[in-house]
Length: 146
Image (cartoon, rainbow, N blue to C red; front, side, top):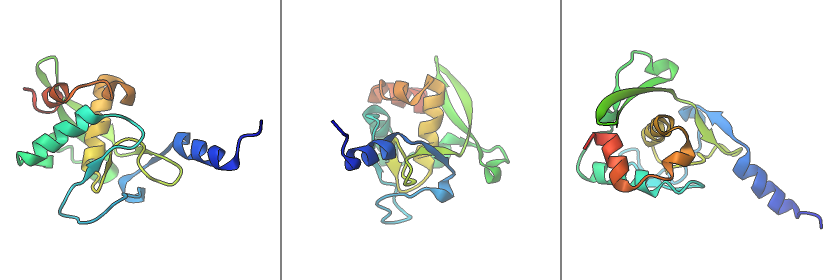
C-alpha cells in the first residue's frame, strides 16, 4: 500500500539532518533570555538532561563548562568534561544537528550552551546514541568529575 504523504513528511522531517550554527537554529519555546529551559526531542537523554538541571539548580554556571579558546567567534569551543577520573577538554565546532525545519534533533533548550555541552558529551562517549545510555549519576561524573 502507498505511504500517506503526511507520514512521509514526518519521516523526512525527523531524519533529514541539517547541521546548523546556533544563530540559524529555531529555539522552540523561547520565553526569556534569562532562563534556560531544557527538554527532549527524539533522543531519550534523560540522564544527561537531569544532570544539567541538577547543576543549574545548584547554581553551577554554564561558563564553568567552557574553556576559552579565543576561537569562539568562529565557532570553535573547548568543553571541560571528565573521563576515567581525569579532566579533559573536548573540542567541538558549533554546528548542531537539526531537522529540516531548523529545530534541534536532540536536547531542546532556549539557549545554545546546553546543546554545545550535549554535543561535547556525545563526542566524548562516541555518539549521541551512547549519550542516551547514561544515567544521571554517570552524566554528573562526566560533567563535574565527581
